[in-house]
Image 1 (cartoon, rainbow, N blue to C red):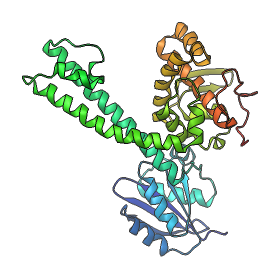
Image 2 (tube, rainbow, N blue to C red; image 1 turned 45 degrees about the vertical axis):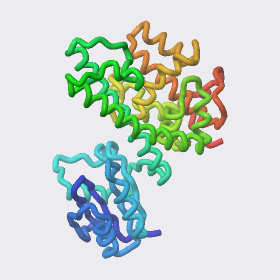
Image 3 (tube, one colour; image 1 turned 120 degrees about the horizontal axis):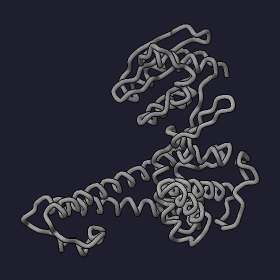
Image 4 (tube, rainbow, N blue to C red; image 1 turned 45 degrees about the horizontal axis):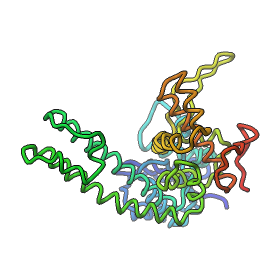
Length: 346
């Protein structure tokens, strides 16, 4: 299909800068639109087709992507980090950026990002919401602990995690403690419903049940890994999976000089957090298995934090291998005969 119009959308929270160019790169139309689906569809329907639309992945890309696709246009999702490297200039405005995207699409130079299915998007939103309330509960609990210390009230470690024991620190003289305890109860009511949804997602996912065969990997962790890593075939190698999770160091190389810097920043930070938290549980449950040995060895030389990252890196490689083989976890199974071996569908 020969494209007649290339459209670039530069999306922000309150507006969309849209530029349409013809196959020769001449501008057909340029406007600033609202973020409603109706305006997106109206803009595209007035252009000669077939149309190819490109927009960068961001927090609000989904409904704009769906609105554009509903008009029959071919829609591409660009990787924003790689797009900046391809088209970096000193002049940067929303209109300029939208025109750059349209012209990159015309040259077939768009670094595409993976577009999850509607089911995957819903699962990812569920995981993100559960993580949000987990962090919110932790923040409120830490606040209550701090108030208890300030007031000189003694308490058992981990007291707030047990609802039956919280009444022992409730004191009408200190309303800030009462408010904190009420907020913890309110958050837990929300998380109970989210946990039920995660349990249902786990029971419906064969991949999540395979990951749960790894000692210490629970239902939430397995569902989170499936939500963000599947289909595993989209990654070219195990190392690509590790990089996506933000668990490999950045590399600066020039001629014979090579330097490993901090962990890569252009990664899935939520998944990195999930894996670093999960590796502690895996190390407790698996005995002296692979994840434990790697984490313990690195921690002795470089500290507990670096050891946790190394253990999480080992865990994600095991995870990718389980998903690739589509078989339960085997403690002594090799991950791959080569570190750069492509992950092919079985």
